[in-house]
Image 1: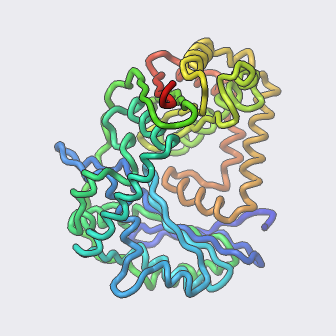
Image 2: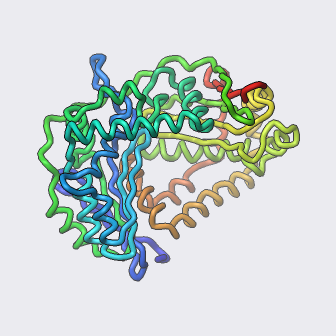
Image 3: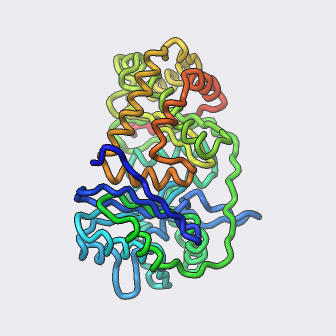
Length: 413
């Protein structure tokens, strides 16, 4: 890996952003095309909504072309391909040791030329429904959906990214095409390549593969949130109960400040309940948690929340302990200047270590560009974070009306 990464960017007249990080002599090339469009982007305004799961449905169906499947073309040129849909993004990617430019052409064909027919949409509906049913038997997935339903009642983020059996019936070739044309506009997408590639050649290939003509744009409206849920629980046929504690952080921050805020939230949680914390050891010694215990911080445009979860034989103690501990909030006593500096250095170290991974570089660049944040400037962002900012943020987020919970109780207990 190069000692110092260099990034080349060109924004085409249609708004499509092309980025490359050349790694001379590096054998693997990783490429990702990302749309700033995900499962929560369903609000068309005036009480009209897209069916849940339509972003994920598009992700599946873009691989289908008249007379061929894109995955087979990637395989022919020695590439592994994949795609994923998140709450706010959809990505298409490949990694290869050979033929990066031919595979780039295939990737462009993949997301630029939709082929939705009544027959292939009907067949895909059954495949995705089977996927949905499979997840219903996974306690980790069920718990995540339930706690999101408490954090954001009746909001698209609390729905399965793949949709539901009912919502799939509302998806057809016409609304797929209309949604694709709206969400996959060139100025709502970017492309990032990391590897031994020539940037000028990359740009020339992209310019030779124009987007199809799009219809008039429809703005996706931000979702309006209901009051946070009080919490709940249900029984499930599992061997051990699972608990999730949720914190909703309503913030109007965007862009650079939101990315910085996510780092601050992670610093807070790592200090208070990370594996090296006194609290983690205390909960372990009391048999409240096991090694499945973890936390997840999400800070994206429109949404910001924290979920703490794990398997436990004592779900009530799990919830009560975390609630009391966070309300007590003695971060100012725990997070000394020295410890804060260590945590900040650890974050910088993790960032630098990730630069050994072309996929980590590409995915972070692609996503951060939608927040107008330069991936190569993250060290400066971290260095600009102060202890006072971290302590002040902890006082904002640890409040009773921001907390909720959900328990999956092992059947028979």
